[in-house]
Image 1 (cartoon, rainbow over the protein chains, first blue to last red):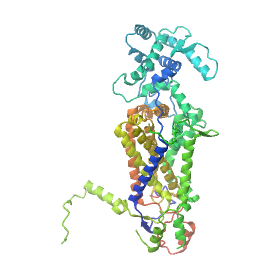
Image 2 (cartoon, rainbow over the protein chains, first blue to last red; image 1 turned 90 degrees about the vertical axis):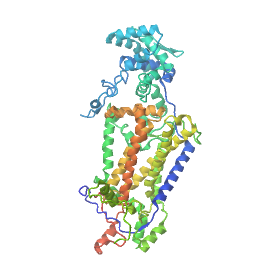
Image 3 (cartoon, each protein chain N blue to C red; image 1 turned 135 degrees about the horizontal axis):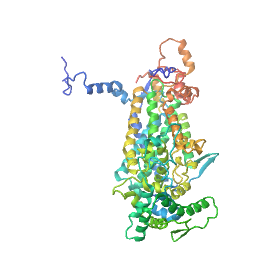
Image 4 (cartoon, rainbow over the protein chains, first blue to last red; image 1 turned 135 degrees about the vertical axis):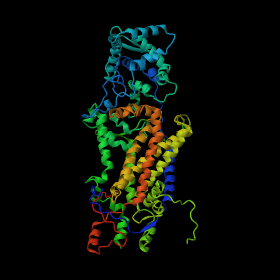
Length: 331
Length: 61
Length: 239
């Protein structure tokens, strides 16, 4: 290792020692830190914003819910077009130069949004002949027909959502009343409107939450499906914006409410705010590669010329060891 | 839920400058870290007499 | 003839006994007086030296409060006041842990504490900081509240982008809870233990030698100064 640091001739200490009780020091430290944690708890407690459910989402934002649901059906939602590890699409596949780890690691958590998020939950509804017939009609149709039906239903919803985002007057093809959504479809939407109406009703009752979580097995701890479905809608993002948790709000450093978050992530958050990462579709892998290099450099500080010389050049040490230098000087 | 003396469950105030947007709580924590670091290296540490005695009598341990 | 009775535990273990080798290596590296010394060098005279033990103290509070949360299960803190109390202690202890670690890190950097063959002390400390970050992340996504929902659905994109999402699924509560409660704390404790044992082995890094003293020593007798000079030039590591 001396090859890596030729300038270091630090010698072992041959000087004086004074009595120092390490065990007592640790006990005092635990007491002090423990009391400080209790004091902060008494003063500020901790945040616990209740989680959103699909039931709440469908009740509070029914139009947003069916907009997301029809996109899951026709495979145009963020999850449907994501790519590995959920499916073989590519809209959210990131890479850097020749590095394509997302693709290399493959589809390890397959999700078929049409089946898992829409048709599957609908099939749990019994004693509904109209729905049974609609599902049969849908499943028997060719892919192009399915896409055409879904598009006819989705277009007015997307146009309305876009108008609302841009603060323009909506086209009036979507209306909400008593929690129900009526869509003036752009053409023949086949069985899709009925399917969406039933899915909305099922969601409001909590049936979609249950179906996505425990539909296939009783004991479950994997919330991927309900979370991805909700994330394809607008409710989580709306709550996050209120809590300053969005990316351009430096959200990954923040906690809900006015609590301190993770200030130690400042450098990680910073890279997302500067170009080219800021507008890059592969921002995540780019930022992680930068942070990996910086982390390796951090670990290797002892060996990096210039960096390892800074403490000697900028004499903060004269403050730290002032008593030692003073005692040495008066000898 | 246990009541806290100060309720921090309201949207955060932020410190904004150019493209930097930090929550006030995080700025306070970072500021405290810097302050505590400076105080730690500047404030005298107890036991000076014991250390001086060790230097003086030539204790090797 | 010895007047001391022979130790009944002593055996005629062959020289290649692994047990004897491990014991002798351990005792050689860290005899009891080095493992738990009752003194420190006289230059250990600043409050900055307290932040290593403060970090360990915070880690102890984290593990204690975390163990209580684990005893009662992950839903407990949402519906009882006492559960929320311990969750709050756990959260604030994490803030104190990172606070103390960062101040400790700043102090150790400005002391160039990797000098004199102490590069592994720096390395284990830096890696502890880096491992503590995913330990905290897995905690945040295990909260089972809105914060957990948001962090998991956002951070999953970062994990997926580097392929880690294929085997480290932030939206899988069971997996994340296991990492948070067992795997990553074990890693942090192992790293902190190695870090502290290395500090005991090498001792706390001595101060830089001031230039005027080095010059004085160079013109004086070739032997070391009477209170143990520790010459060093620009910071650097040495094996």
